[in-house]
Image (cartoon, rainbow, N blue to C red; front, side, top):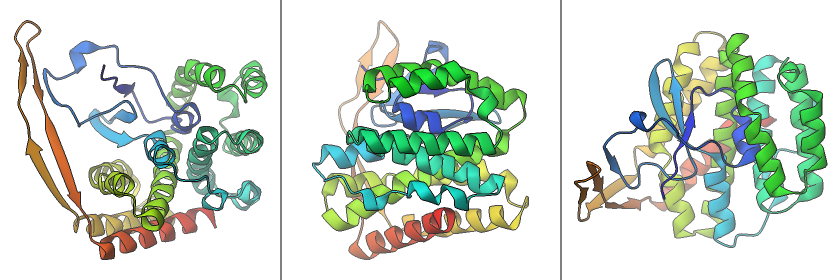
Length: 299
């Protein structure tokens, strides 16, 4: 069964990284009667932002693709936990909550329990400094920490508190923080994906990287209202636009298969198979540019 992740806003995106899953969509009337089988999967995040719907891959999608292809865990790809003291502005803190959230998901997938605890502590510290600690009750933190080595319990606890964070950031008008957390999480997940794609030359990982063109366009659109807020925003958005130009060099071919019509339920299913062609040059260039963007965030 095709599950779709439904989130009313992008707030507290790093929770989606820790949890590696979210609530299933419940409002069936919001789904189109016609859909493409490959448009969303169980690890896609459907976002509603300023009354516009966007889709982005969750960091789980990228990191699980790496693990699923038997790629060894590589701690060198992560932002070191002791870098947390470098982040003193709201801009830096919000971006790196997203970064560390993705790293936490990566660690959790590879069962790196001691580091999971360490990175969860770092996220708590940044959340407190960013003024988001009031959104998380002390007893919830204690329960999460007590179940940190139990994947199922951890997932259940954090998904259960998602709406609490969402509500807090809405009420307190923290839209910018939400956007930056989202951005940091996406950049880190694509950094991990691209580094593994370049090193392993694994076809599935390369294809997953190639699929990021439209999510990147969506991310730029979500960030664009903040372009003139500061030089930091301007530089970040400009670097993502520059990256998007490189994705334009990727060739996408779609072969449409038999269409299935469910007359009774009035649903048309359009089946397709996509073929992504990316040259060695574009793979290296995209990987290098993602690395550069990421390093400016995590320095």
